[in-house]
Structure formats: structure tokens, C-alpha cells
Image (cartoon, rainbow, N blue to C red; front, side, top):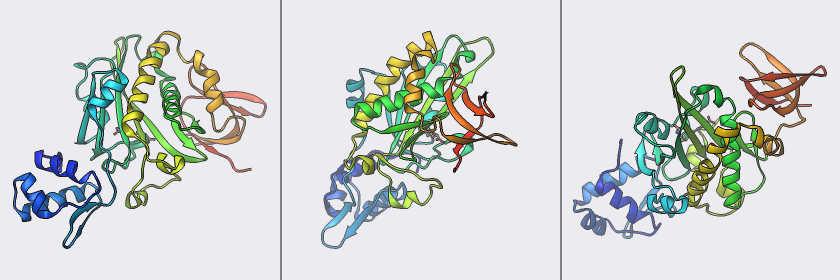
Length: 321
Ligand code: BTN
């Protein structure tokens, strides 16, 4: 299924309350037969919605679903350039396809990604209405040279947004993972469209785990956590989206003017590996050392045998003592 048609959307909005709805009533609402109702239900189950049928009572979503609300996000963030889609391939791709005909601040958020992308060619598991799949467009007139610290800045913006909605204790793992007590909470994937000596178009993709369905959790091969379990509350994805937009709106122009320098201290405060023994995994090498934070270009600083070396690429993992 590549999109929900009008009936599919109506059915989704009806079942979102988590109450029972009889097949007969659903058929009337959609203007379709009981058999077709079954097909629409199957369509929603295919995209990961947990919908049951109980004889004599009807259909029910296993939990109430709070859908993304485009109008609310626009008004809370004071940004009219927000597009909410129900189903698409990838929110990053949606924006990339529209370059250069979009303006700074254009945002795309989806309920479901058919082909959500993670870093290093991985898939980003994207079950329906469970997490936040968010992409934001920004054009850098100074070109690609300015961008080495961008993913770090976006990490800081994401932590700021989480703090604004009441989530404390989140930390950053160089270059762009968001962690909570050693488990991955969110990831950032920045994709570029750039030509030499021209403005650089960036699509900033952020995926945040909000409420992981048990079936989808089995597909993830690393320790993870979601906002609902760490906060003990049902998190509001509309508030979170608006907070992210507001932070990016504020920080990106500042970063364009002054680079990463004003944010270095904030990074040091949030760095989960600062002053810890780590391994930097490079293409053919595994470099052990002590993590000493970052420099103004966003490079990782590693102390090896008393000397500081800087790294732009690679992955960092904690080295067990
Ligand atoms: C990572 O591997 O840690 C980065 C994950 C980034 C996922 C987000 S979800 C919204 C945006 N659209 C995508 O296809 N990917 C990013």
C-alpha cells in the first residue's frame, strides 16, 4: 500500500479512539460492503496497526492512536511550511525530490515510511503512528565547507527540543546518535544535494523512538529505548514536532553565522563518552584512546599515548575496561 485512500483515512480516524466499532457502522461510514470493510481493516493491519475483531462487538485498535496534526504543528511552531503525510517512502526522499523548489524550513513528517533510511545504508524501522519520522530542509549559501559540524548541531537541537517537552537525561554520541542510559533513542541522517561552488541543499532527517510496538522491536539489532517507556507517559508527537522545528529554526541561522564554536560547551555537557576509554572504528583499523570531545569542525578528539588526534569519519564505541 503506498497511500491511504479517503476510506482508509476515515477508518483510521474512526478506530484511533481505541473503542469498538461494529462492521455494520464502519460499512455505512465508508459507503462499502462488509467484505470491503474487512479488506480496509487488512490494509491497516499491513502497515502495522494492531486491530482486533471481537464477534458481536466489532473492530478495535489495540491502543488509542494519536495521529499527527498538521494544523496544530504549524501553529505551535509558527511555521506554515509543514507537511504531514500518512504513508511515503522516506521523509528525507520526499524533500530531496522537491529541491530546489522548496524554502528553508520546509518540513515533512510521516506516520509511516515504506523505506525509512538509516545511516550506513541501514533501514530505519518505521511502524505506523508509533514514532516520529521528521525531515527539515535548509539551504547553506556558504556551500559544503560549512557543514562538517552540522550533524552535531542537529543532535544538540534535538536534545534541546526533548528537554522542552520535559525529557531530561538524554545524551549525545558522536557524531549524531541520541542516547538515553546507553540505549539508542533517536538517530539523525543528513542528506546533501550540492555542486562545487554553489549553495548546498541539506535535508535533515531525524527519527525518534516514541512507542515501540513489540513486533517491530524484534527487527532492531542494538539496545534501544523509546520516549513513552523512559518518561512513563504517552508522549505527544505534535508537541515534539513543533519543538524540533522551533529549535532548528533558531539554531540553523546561528550556526550559519558562527559555526559550532558557540555550541562546543553544550556538546561537552551532553557527550556520553567524554573522558571515557573508547574505540574509534575506522575502515581497516580499530583505534583505542580516551574520548576528549570535539573541535570546532565537529571532529572527534581522541587522546592516544598522550597526544590528541582528530577524526572526521568512523564510528565510536565504548571500550570496556
Ligand atoms: C540512524 O541510522 O541513526 C539515522 C536514522 C534517521 C531516520 C530518519 S526517520 C526520518 C528521516 N527519513 C528517513 O528515511 N530517515 C530519517
